[in-house]
Amino acid sequence: MAKIGYVRVSTKDQKFDRQHEKLKAENVDLIFEDKLSGKDTNRPKFQELLKYIRKGDIVVVTELDRLGRNSRELTETMDTLKKERVTVQILNLPSFKDIQDENLRQLLNNLILELYKYQAESERRSIRERQRQGIEIAKEKGVYKGRPTTYTHDAKDPQKRITYFKILEMLEDGRPIKRISEETGVSRPTIYKIRKQLE
Image 1 (tube, rainbow, N blue to C red):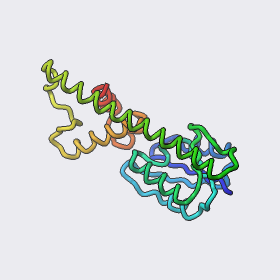
Image 2: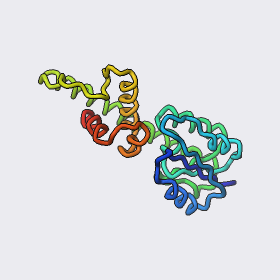
Image 3: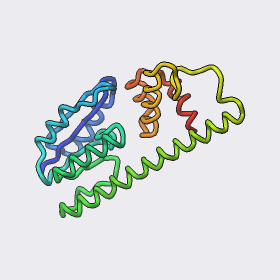
């Protein structure tokens, strides 16, 4: 059984060394690392990791979002790893690495991940509902209309609309404002304004 670490950072992310330190503290045998731009969805080193791992191995990451930037990507990644019969250890979530029974370890691991995804999805639904209610209240008060902002759901520029919904998705996924700004090129004050609309 091998312990394999996986690191994923954006091109401007400064957490590269911190992830390495945490993985080395777990005595991983090997680390695969992807350094991606905001729009890049290819993960060449992760594909190498999939070819390397064997049944019973443990894949270690510092945080769950290292495996996927949204629910869809995360689910696809977890399904792929599940098919390979490996255990995923996420350092900021409960760990079952000391359980020797592989099947039990896998069962508990999957349970925690499903609960985490359920919680994240519930939070996303709650944010969308608050957004809808906020817009309705603003319309009733006559304050919803006004000088149009650059990034909105109905921005005239199609690319701005796409960026707006991407920012919403990243906020719903709990991504840090700094990371969202780096990956989208939108200023942090603008992202704070968008987040405030959801509250």
